[in-house]
Length: 364
Image 1: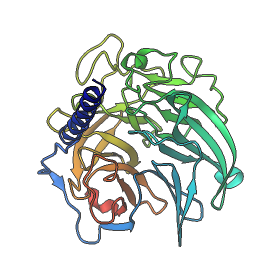
Image 2: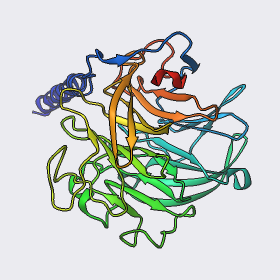
Image 3: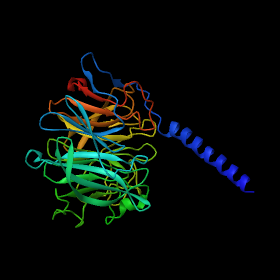
Image 4: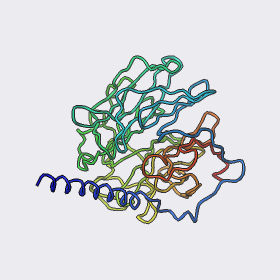
């Protein structure tokens, strides 16, 4: 009997594994046909780094070196040499791991660096933001800025950035607990706003860290020329979103999606269709445009920002470099993107994963 049960268990385990592989190919396969995309001209693209392992975020030090987070738990410093800093406590599980990275606005004075990471607490998974001082390739003075952000194999959010108001903004996913996104006492499915030391700003709308709610899995933050915050968000059934974020705003998940109406709920400015899914991640702002990248869409997207609207959506590089995780504007004002073809859902090519520099002229 024990042998029968053991054999049955093995068969079920193999069946589940095969099902997951097959479903991954369907669910995470690109949906774009890449027909209406702009391809780069000669000289508009340069590979600046290769052979990274699931890079998630990029930032630049004052002297010009790049810092890149890798999801398995490494912070990579890229300058004349490539040096690796192992970050303690990271749990790389599913979409979780070492994710967001940002420098303090006064980094030259205080050397503060902030990291968003997934970790284990008891038998569970959670996310937190930590602050360090960076000296060369040494991280010291670890301080927890916020913890107990819901974590899971899926929907961990992870983007962190300082806004023009000097506050730290943090995107969090619903961690598979859909209804938590509507609970303003929960940190899941939110955009959070904190002082640089983790304390709560006096004008936060709910007297806690929550700035906006009703989010499924937001992963991109960008401020336009009017200091207005925009965010990109993974939807369900392909209805990915670009949102104009308001303090205290309810963005509807899981009650509404796409163009559905909900009492007091804010509709996305742009959303994808079920036929052409973006799976949007990082976002940036450049010369009147919101830029964001797609994992499943495998493209750089650009929309013109006009007051409270965004329009004239275009896509670039469709399918050329595979899954794209992050877009950022470098100190040279060029556009940088990170690929994520080694995340278990892509098809890695030689040199993956990469940092790619684009000349802004590609947006013509």
